[in-house]
Length: 54
Image (tube, rainbow, N blue to C red; front, side, top):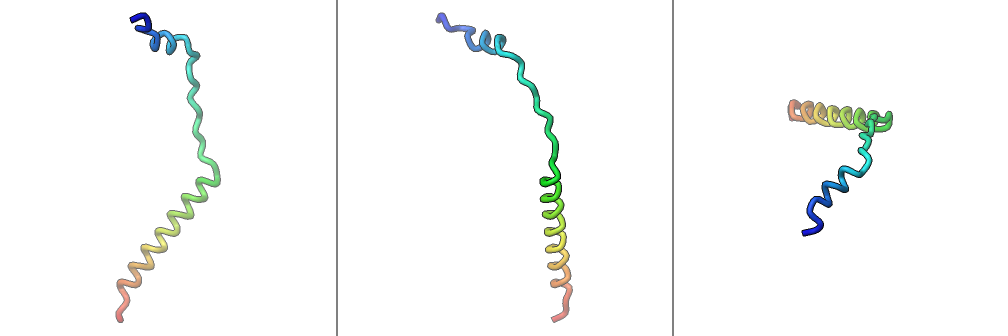
């Protein structure tokens, strides 16, 4: 077939892709921190409720 090797030739002729640097923004850090605090408070509330004498 005349198209054999076409994919390889196209890949070799394409410029190399740059890898982006991933930086975590302050909003993402704040959201993750809020999530951790919320989950921790919820678990502590469940433990406190489970330990209560009714």
